[in-house]
Picture 1 (cartoon, rainbow, N blue to C red):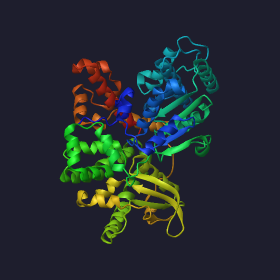
Picture 2 (picture 1 turned 120 degrees about the vertical axis):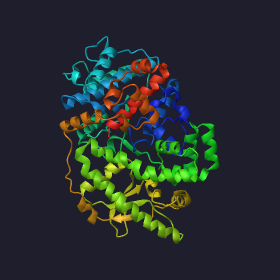
Picture 3 (picture 1 turned 90 degrees about the vertical axis):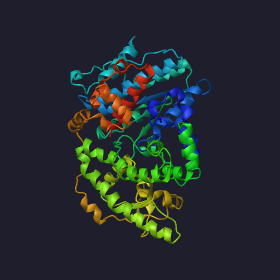
Picture 4 (picture 1 turned 135 degrees about the vertical axis):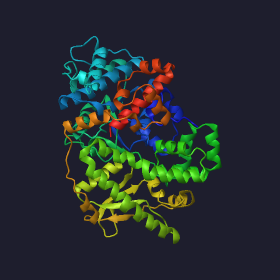
Length: 530
């Protein structure tokens, strides 16, 4: 069976273009990311945000001599474990990450740093920044709990002036930052700080692009989404021309000859898995692993198990990590499972018997309670539903938001998805949607009040998660067993492990040990982030 790379983090940046399957929509996003206009790329987990950032970075590196645009990729994923003394330190951590990543990108591109980024012209600025970032990111460890000295960090204005000087000296047009995993953790205060930095840092010489999750982002009063950035939703429409072919090409980039043969023999079943994945390449790869022969029986089983159980686990796990969201998470799951999906299913059965178009859409009135919209936002965050469009008129001239349910969750309600699923998807139309008014009876079941999390709540939740078993991580069984074989039994153990430890204990080479470490740590931070 093909050993799929399901996370961008495990693909070498120098190899990223080899995995890229170009579509018209993706090409448009990449060109936007490479431009001098700030972009915020929005999408649920696994849909490909990180991958497109990396593709844009790789293309700018390839064309650096011609266009003189320096790409700087930086991931904020480790923000999930920061335990800082005050909110200003989070801002300092972000700035330190940007400074460190810029210096690294300049060096790798062959540029000599002509000026210092730090106040005081520190001769050992790279060493200082590396140590400073490490101190911030180790703040979750009890032995690291101390004041972090960031006195030499530049102010935003000094940083922008330094970048301007660097660009002029090195004949660089602009520096394009690609900030991955930005503002994705469920701490509103930190999210607001990120968007404050994002707005502050843009200049004629600096352009910021960021990837965020939908539904749960707090922008604050300073950042205005309409004016301060171009927002792009990364959604792959299952009804679009060429959808299945594009998803198949993504698989072909990694699949072995046996799987390719099975797909060719059972293209209708593969199409169903592609539709069920709802445009999410990671989900498609994970379900293919569980249906390696792509037979109808396998596909029926995988769709019913994965989309009735597994896909909901990620959503429900948010309740374990963040107690303040329990009411929203439980209501959202009940609302979709007990009302939205059954009602759409019942209507589709009627539509198909009458040879009419089908639906995967529902509509929520704009005057629905704010807590309902928050619960729906969490469903968007984990990819159970997607916001299709705002300001849509319904049958009684009411205005609201149209959402689509995950296609796989809808197909899982079929007795034999392989028999009826393709027909349902190929007949989808946005003109049919189930409507829920401003005072729908189900809303009364959500009694949780709206509130934010304080740092103490978040810290307590983090400690609980670090003590959990590695079984909770989204990793293949062989890798879970490999970690346990090294006595890395908890999430905290994996975070603290070094490549040298893995390599020495496992008697494997550098490449294999790095692969194990990278897979495990990326899964840890993805898990901890929500």
